[in-house]
Image (cartoon, rainbow, N blue to C red):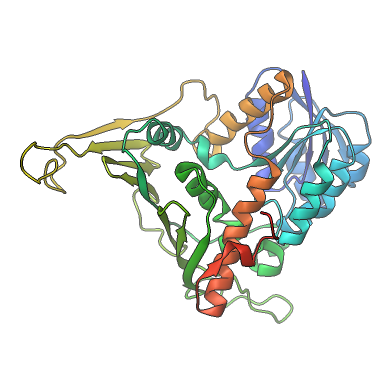
Length: 368
C-alpha cells in the first residue's frame, strides 16, 4: 500500500484523487489546502476520510504519507517543493514545474542525491493514441523524423480559485502553463533538446473585459511557436483558446522521410501512412488527400479504469509512478526534463516580446 498526500485540492488535485481512487494498492491518507471549499470538495471524494491540513508543511511532517502529489498554483510550486525535497517522500509535482528558471535550477540542485522519487506530471505522453504514436515513431514507422506539428484549438482557461491563472506572474505565461506539455512531447518525439524558438502570439479575445483590483488579465490566448532542434528537425505549436467550435481539438502530426503519423483527440484516432517508392519513377506513394494506403484505427488502453480529464493519461501516469515507487525505478519525467519544457515556453514568450528568435542558451544556464 502506498499512502498519498495531496497538497492542493483544486480541480487538478481532485482529479488526482479520482485517479488514485480507481487504482488498487493506494490510499489518500492526507490532504492540505489553504482554501476551505477546496478541502471540503476533496474530502467528499475520498472513500476513507483522510487527515485534513491547512498547512502543507504539517502534512509533509505528519508521517501519514509515503508519496505526495503537489497540485498547488504554479507560482507556489517552488516553495512547496523546497519543503517536500527536504523529506524522503516520493513526489509527483504538477506541471509546470516552476514559473522561473532560477527556481527550477534550485530544485534540481536540492534534489541531487535524495532517496525519494521526484516525477514531473506531464501526462499528455500517456494518452493512448499519443503513446502509440510515440512508440511507432521511435520504432521507425515514419523513418527519420523531420517535423512535429501540434495543434490545440479549444476553449479559454477554466476558472480557478481566486482566478490566479489570469496573470502571467502566477502562471509563467500561457506558453508555460498550458503548453509545457507540448514542448515536452516535441522533445520526446524528436529525442533531442531544442536549440532555438521563434514565436508570435497575443491576447486577442479572452478576458479583456475582466478586472482584478483594477488590473486586466495579461495571458495570451493564441500563438504560433516554431522549435528548432540540432539535428535539423523542427516542431510547430498552433494554439488558439477561443476556438470551441471544433470536432477534434487536439491534433499531433509526426512526419518523417518515410511516412506520416497523426493522432486526433477526443476521437482517440491514430492514422498512419507510408511513402512507397514506385521503383524507377520518382513518384512516392498515393496522392495526398486520397486516403489510399492510410491505416486508421481507434486506440485505447483497456487497463484504464478512469478516463478523467485527459483520456486516461493521468491514470496511466499514476500506475507508472506507483510502479516506480515499488520497484525503485527512476522517474520517467525528472526535474531536469520538466524544467526544459518550462524553458521552451519562456523562450517562446521572450521571442514574442522581443520580436526575434530566442536561443535556449539565453534562457537556461550554461551547461544545460
